[in-house]
Image 1: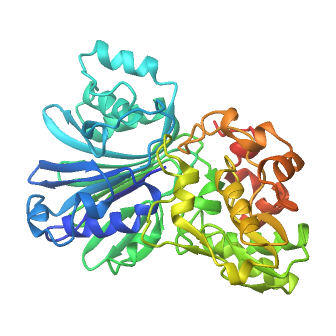
Image 2: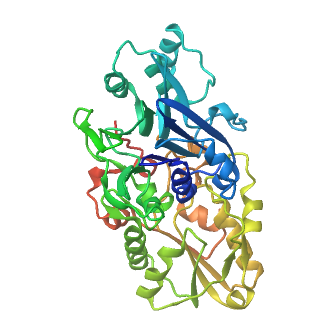
Amino acid sequence: MCGITGIVGTGDIAKQIYYNLVDLQHRGQQGCGMAVSKDGFIKVIKNKGMVYQVFPDDDDEIFKELPGNCGIGHTLYSTIGKSGEIKQTRTFQPLIGYFYDKPFALAHNGNLIELEGLREEAKRKGYQFKSEVSDTEVIVALLSTSRETDFIEALKKVLPRLKGAFALTILFDDKVIGVRDKCGIRPLCLGQGNGTFILSSESCALYTLEANFIREIEPGEIIILGKDGIERQFIWADSPCLCGCIIELIYFARPDSKIFGQYVQGYRERAGTILAKEHPVEADVVMPIPESGRIYCDPFAAVLGISVREGIFRNRHIPKRTFISPRDTDRRKVMRIKLHPVRPVIHGKSVCVTDDSIIRANVSSEVSRMLRNEGATEVHVRIGSAPIRHPCCFGIDMPTRGELIAANFSVEEIQRRIIQVDSLGYLSLRGMIEATGLPRENLCLGCFTGEYPE
């Protein structure tokens, strides 16, 4: 899961890309970068760290190094990969390739699978890989070694060979190209404002730029933006059909974003309402696990007539999201730094906490222990999604069943042995689908059911 953007404007747009990446920071916090083009020449800056660290807002010089009226950007959330691998600067995105000696830059959100054959093919054609683990570089390699003489024709030949999930922004010949896979697993949208056309993983990033949401890029679509706006838009895939990742609605996307035809806030409110009906509880207070459980909390409590209190304080000076932290992160330690109990709200009370999901149970078990230590008489947990029992190969960093707590323990075992609470209630799969407002066939539910789009 990453954040990608592409912008074509009337003047230098590096600062606009920066603002867009800031609004997509929640999608990736390990590194970021941007590439800007002027007269066909591409300049790229990328590194590890948060957007404000790589591109300090008060450092005008770094933006002067990126002249041009079109460019793309990326925030990194590395997936699957090798555990403990050190990410080198060259594997941060956008990646640079050459198509008949003309440079192009590419940014990718998603994850590709079954790449060894394609990697070996590119090597035989003379491409020298800088990384043996980057799925994105395989796309760059295939484009760089294509025999097609037209870049778009080369792209049309490469895309059907890719398996997995991908939303792309590409910078070539002073144009920005947006691409979405045939299932639309990862989001990508189009906005317009003040003479600027914008591609972005989420519509929330359009607001800062005073741009209007136009539409989502269709599954299997290519859109080409130039200095005069939209130059071409067409479907590249055979039989495209939306199969959007439901985890986007549950956790990843910001609540003010519109993806898969609806606002994310709507899913979380409906999920909270249905959850209360499926798993009612008697408690003195309901409180969210900040911030992921917040939107689920209010409708859940409203249905049951229980007051909502802020019993867990989140240190807002710790900006990183726990789930998307690197794999070698001590998540329990992060939770103790980030979340602190408010004793007067908790002590002597029966409390119910809401959250979006339980993946590895690091957060839930730590929260339970925290509440017990502060004198809670009972601790109940309610989750706004079904149990996650299957790995993901489409861009979420949970590649094995072994790390998924619900794949290895029953709900009762998770409740009693793992997080040690008085009751635990998950939203049912049926309730979860109902909360999306989408037909089941338009959702990727692979991590819940083990059935994946092809």
